[in-house]
Length: 325
Length: 272
Image 1 (spheres, rainbow over the protein chains, first blue to last red):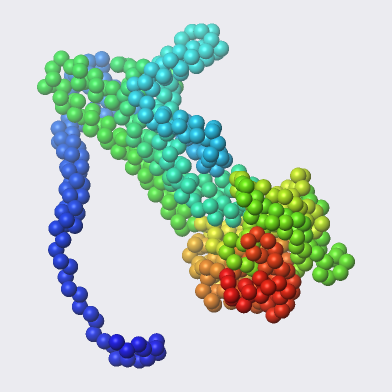
Image 2: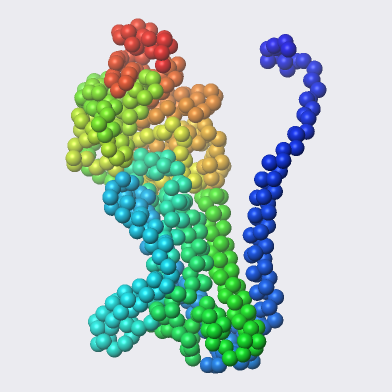
């Protein structure tokens, strides 16, 4: 082939484009990509089976009356039963948990990422603690909540404020929420840390070189950028906590409450716990089954709704960041 | 500048107070820097003049960027760094224990190799430093922002889209925005760490013209591995090699008739 200078090449008449032979059929490539596709289908299939089963069986028992009624003590009468207090209880405890877990988790993550020296012994202890926290079984959190929040913090609060009458030193919405907050802390910390680390160090340097303090840099540049990631951590925490039953067993859930929870010191009913009750305490399994399915469906829809709200807020934050101003 | 914070440092010397032109403004006195146990800068002695462009040249890893970052104490941010010696800017040792680093960085600005505009609007990028240092009124901000964008030859290109994202600008425009951001707070010294190395030749040429313009008002220290660039825009050049200052002098002398053999080898391309 003659070598041409760029000018000569451009002036030459266009050559025909090369035609490529089709790739030879490679069995193992095909097999592997097929395998990954099958795995995906498998997972989706399981998810679809569960969801469809619940949807099909629960949809017929759900009604506006069902989700807006406070039931009488007999949960198993399909005509008078309702799940309003369970919905309210679940939603409240998740919201109160979020109010506690996000600030504490974010501040811990900021400390670990921005301030702590990576090699110091204290940092390593904190990281080990966070990792171990993530591995603790939920029921242990429940016992922790009972022992620490109720028997220690609550009872001492009562001594100080209410002359030892039982107000805080017993199962309550606040203690259940705090227990859940402790349980979901690692999720928020890790999600926040990842989003902080994703911010290029050049931005921090630019801010510091202009004469900002480290705190100003974090508040004005780093945190606003990390907001979507923090919200992801919140979404994950909410999804996890909405369905957890063991941590709230000793810390605040009640078998039956005649009214909706109004104060942080009230006990509450809960969808997850109610599912357990319906499954194990019913006198007539056939009659209770539709109510059970309906309750499960309500729990899924509530979790889904909480997630959607959070995802929408996060999408708006992301859009604002991208277009910004 | 009286409307901005009362400086904790005594005012740095300006040409109004210097006895004669060419008096040293930045004095690097026997500075050594250690990363842990390894000595990255070896007893640097250097005096830079005011309102002059000084270039730091040398092969990769010779310590020129490290020394540059000492001038605004950005090396403080790295763990395990230890500095001996003193650096005086306008007669005051910036490594004295009572020095306010925030004030220092207001007076010694920096432009980085990879342009790093904040993911905000062009207006907000330049306003960031101004707000940090007390300029709050919108009219003041508008005026100062326009002034710095004019000075960095960016105003005509962005004046109609000040509130659009800075990330939508081209590489060269982003770098000029970073320069505008740095000069908005009216520092006395601008440090530039290979500011044009990531840019195409035309954008580079515009940055170089900008630097020649800026030196009327600011003292500029520029690190560059592009010797032609150093020859084009600097008045004085310092040549570094493995942590040592090998030679320092007028740019024309360094490039045409250097005193040291190592300098001559480097500028003639025998190594680098």
